[in-house]
Length: 301
Image 1 (cartoon, rainbow, N blue to C red):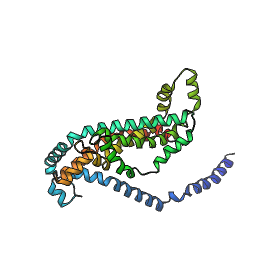
Image 2: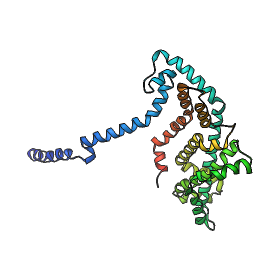
Image 3: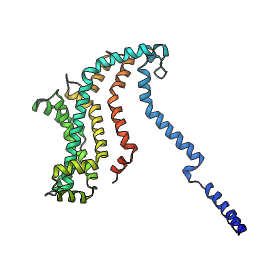
Image 4: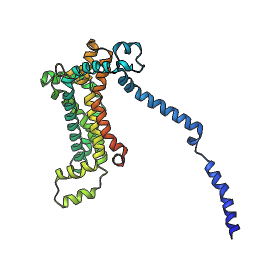
C-alpha cells in the first residue's frame, strides 16, 4: 500500500513541477522588465513637476537660475524658505480662502443640481422624458469655449454681474450640471427599485428618497464628481481672466504677478506649492474611497 502511494506521488510530482514552469507571456522575465521600466518612467514623469516645485521653493533665486534640477543647499534652506514662502503668501493671502470657498460652493451646487436632475430623470415618469434627456446630452456636444464670446458680454453688460464671484460661478454651474446629470443618472438607475417601493409604502416622499436612499447609495461617485468640480473651479483661469477685474482668483493673481515680475523664481515655486494644498487635501480625502471597495461598488456599470 505504501509503495502505491509513493508511486502516485512520484507520478504527480513531475506534473506539478511542469505546471509551475509554465508562465503567461506577461509573467516572463523580459516582459516583467519592460512593464516595470515603463511604469517607473511614467511614475517619475508624473511626479517630476511636483518634485521640482518642492525643491525649488527651498532655493534662492540664484540657485534656481544656475540649475533648477539641483537639490537645495543645506546652509540656505531656512533662509530661502522664509523668503520665498513669506513673499508667496503675501500675494496669495487676500484671494486664497475666498477662492477655496467659491470653489466649494460652486462644486456643491454643481453636484447637487446634477444629482437632482439625475434623480428626476431616473425615478420620475413624465411626458417627453427621453427627448428632454437627449436635449441635455446635446449640450455636451458643444465645447464650452465657443460660448465665451456670448457669455462675456451677457454677464458683464446684460446681467451686470461681471467682476463678481456670482457671475464667475453662474455659467460654470449651468454647464457642469449637465455633466453631473449624465454621470450620476447611470448610477442612480442601477439602484434597486424595491428600496424605493418599500420606502414609498412607508410614506416616504421624494425628499426622503433622495437624501436617505439615492445619495447614500451613490456617495462614492457623488464625492468623486464633487472633487472633480472643485478642482475644475479652483484651477479655472481662462473664464476667470475674462470676467474678473478686482475680485481675482488664485490662478489669475499668480499669473499676473509672475508675468509682471513682482516675485522671482523661488517665490513663484513656493506660490505654486501653497496653491496646490487644497487639491492635495481633496485628493487625500478621496483616496479613502479609491482604496476601499466603496468606490469600486459605485463604479459598477
